[in-house]
Length: 147
Image 1 (cartoon, rainbow, N blue to C red):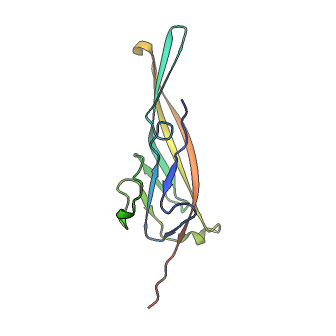
Image 2 (tube, one colour):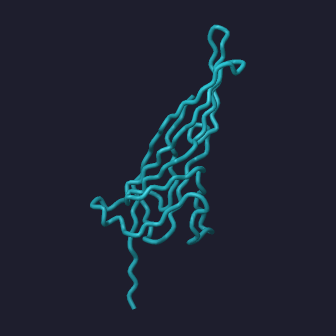
Image 3 (cartoon, helix red, strand yellow):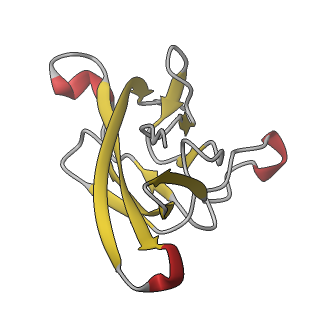
């Protein structure tokens, strides 16, 4: 069973520019290896063990000292959402990334995989936890308006 780190989806996209105060959408791809569910079995000597894995949460460290905990895969941003905040997993920056010293916010997404396993017939069961982390750098600018 292969369990990967979140496949980060974020607005603004890495390489693009976000704006202070605008909504940041956070999400991950929802395949078996990036979010689950993922199931695998192995047999030996007449015994079969089956494991079922799923992400129970993703903790997003936004690079500005704030963390967001999401219990869903998040909602991918679409242009028709405009300035509406994410319905399930989002953030807003209140300072530009130029204040970080690196000119970017380093965003990490850490998924917690919950893995339930059982031996044929259900005589023995258990749970394991695995952690996977991925990261991206994004730019957030401040827009100033003059009269």
